[in-house]
Image (cartoon, rainbow, N blue to C red; front, side, top):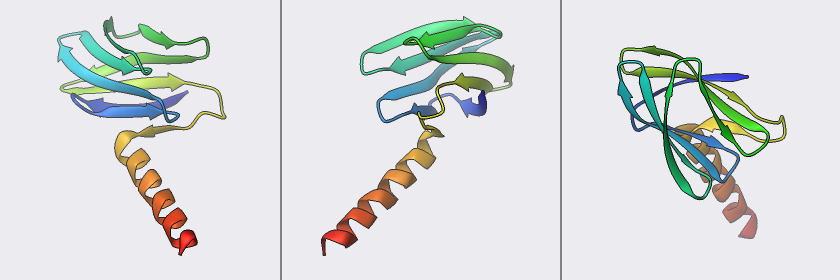
Length: 102
């Protein structure tokens, strides 16, 4: 299980196609938006999980102020990144491909 902390509006990328975004925090209720590519918003409490397909789950581990600790379980061959890291990786890959083309 990979544990990441996110705030409202921050996203986790699972592979290249799944986005998991914290869209709201109200007391002990956390609203999570998943784009898989269909868009679905669900509300969960600490200790509950959202299952994505047969082999990926996102569990709400804790809430502290406006931050949520999420535990992501996915197969080892599927990359899991904070969105800002994912975007840097993709930009570096694009730059490497562009330099090979010249």
